[in-house]
Amino acid sequence: MTRLTHFIANQDVVPASGAWLPVYEPATGTRYAEAPDGDARDVAMAVDAARAAFPAWSTTPAATRSRILLDIADRLERRVAEFAQAESRDQGKPVALARDLEIPRAAANFRYFATKILHESTECFRTDSLTSGDRALNYVLRQPRGVVGAISPWNLPLYLFTWKIAPALATGNTVVAKPSEITPYTAWMFGELCREAKLPAGVLNIVHGLGPKVGQAIVAHPAVTTITFTGGTSTGAAIAAAAAPHFKKLSLELGGKNATIVCEDVDLESALSTIVRSAFQNQGEICLCGSRILVHRARLKEFCDRFIDESRTLKVGDPTAPDTDVGAIVSRQHLEKIQSYVALAKLEGGKVACGGGVPRLLPERCRNGWFHEPTVIVGLAPNCRTATEEIFGPVVSIHGYDTHGEAVAIANGTRYGLAASIWTRDIDRAHRMAAKIDSGVVWINTWMLRDLRTPFGGMKDSGVGREGGDDAMRFFTETKNVCVGFRES
Ligand code: TXE
Picture 1 (cartoon, rainbow, N blue to C red):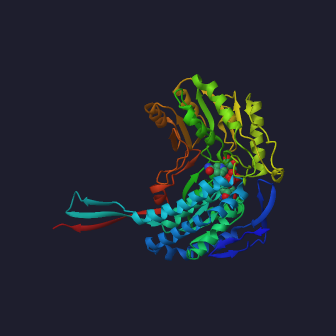
Picture 2: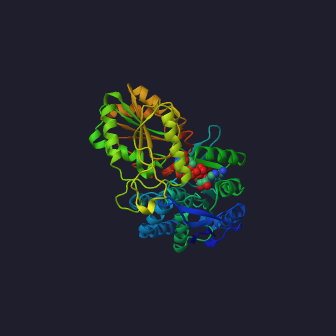
Picture 3: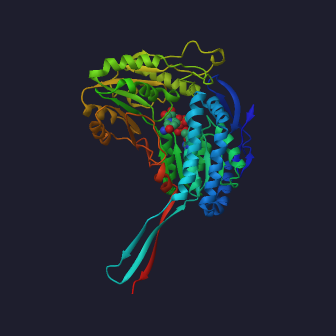
């Protein structure tokens, strides 16, 4: 059984506690590795390493930082098959999804920020004093903030891990990162890549363990100036409360309950497969999945029939099989949460129109794994718990609406505000609706077409702050105004 280690100052470090956490393969329900059960002592060691590395890394020329980060991206791309297999075994997602999308995107995170820092500029303002002949040039410096704490979840393990680490390192910070204890494996492999690419010791440190121990210690450490977190809304609230008295800079990417709005003039022929994918990709364990589908009543029956037919064609099964569409649920506990929501939906008056249980006909290897069928629920009120709380699994509800104003009101009727998609041929209407929807991203006739230059984040209880593109560059730097006076005569 593989024993993972912390990665601190480029060394493999065993936990100070001497204790280990089990790591499971969701597709089989078996324990296949152990990860360090880290604690505040390991975090302190990692923060010391990050502090020691900061002066040199923060003054390393951007071109040199860029070269090292690009080398990491190259190495990851060369080993994409190996990382994809490991990600799938650890998380339950289909290998093909990890291989074709997520691991390449993790490399793209590094490639994008490694090259972005080569082309940065800052503002400069010429200032004239009203009362004297003084003149000045005010210019803006954006400097790295020091040690960044990066805490990431289990749904897109390496992709979200690198989404945080790449801009933090590119802008000259050093990092103490914690992957989810549920999916630690590819983060462990990633440390090895960084060592091979000769990332200087202490620039990136990876500490494994439980949120309330390792995560909390990162947030509480006085030398960690900046926290970037993706995960559950209640965890985000705890982190915000712990960080506030120390005035740490925070970026919180939290949960979502995203509306998919299908208008009466939708081109269903071309839209259907993407709408189905938006519901069930990665077993619905993506914060951007569309889990509430709002359909104009003129097309409701037709949409339901076709959506359900298409959902039934999805193959649920062994994540290693090349034709698997929906893999395993990340943990037994999470499967039970999903099942409890299907039971709740029935209590709330919903009808399970498709799926609803554990798939039959799983291959022998997966008999003890954690699986859930793609599930479609109809007949629910749009304001009930099932339709407004985040389930984070392969479960969607479909609701009818009569006017576009009503669709927007339903879309906005949850505590979340992460994403939405609108499906229509009337682009003027789509623009009007997009402006009124309270979410950080609105897709029109597409879904998950991500561009690393765009701002990413949520409104309301879906988070605080934006990352991606220039927003990430600003988040991970401190802005300083330097005013240089001069006289013209
Ligand atoms: O999140 P947690 P989990 C949502 C989704 C899911 C729920 C719980 O609804 O069901 O969150 O998932 C660390 N101080 N999303 O359990 O617990 C933890 O160890 C500091 C949405 O994964 O929030 C892990 O590394 N850190 C999301 C990370 O926080 C703490 C993606 C996330 O764990 C901590 C995943 C603490 N007190 C889940 N407690 C999205 N928006 O993408 C835990 N952690």
